Length: 264
View 1: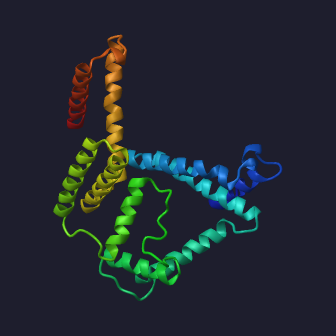
View 2: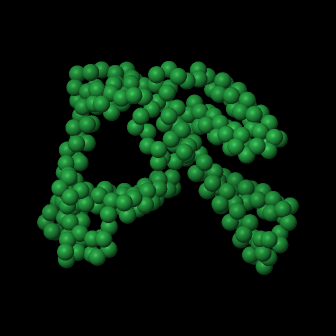
View 3: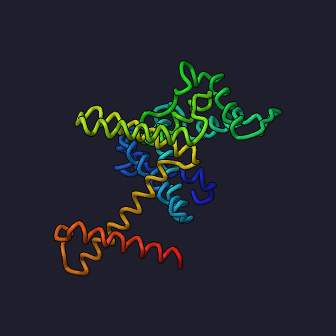
């Protein structure tokens, strides 16, 4: 195996792990049992990208690649396809979807590229009844909302200016406050959904990925909250013993400390 090209070697390692003389755990796995690992590896890769750590990105890309090869090995055992079929299919798809690179077509900008992409998908039978088809329901809700909005935008169903979306946000906030006063749980949930959907629109108009923005804010919250926990520990106090005023003071101290570190 050592003389094999690295990719073929990895494919053969996977086949060996699934063989009768392989690993009991790997042999027991199914498509369904591996689904959580695919999601986990994808999110670990996102975290590594967020941290801009090349070595960790490389490692997580490898882990995600291994999950892809795992699924292909299972398919191969069932006589459906193998990793080489997958590579051939995606190669042909990229060649067909990029005639402006590999053919004679010409495009002026990325918007035209996306329009041509949708046209190719339609010819391939990938878009039949709706331009919104093909957006996975299992996507994180913020990302799915963004993809839905992007698809609708491509056919002209969109706001014209960011200010219009901001006005919509204020309108939705007023409706949420009215629902809150009524105390109707279903209406409150509906209005929160409208608020979030509008915030995704604002993010899109601002060129910001809402999923990334929320992830970073969550990490910032975790960092500051851990600072409060550490300060409480130093004073030999439980968090539950601190007053809200004391915790808020530590929160502001954590913000100042982070600002100081950023300036250094």
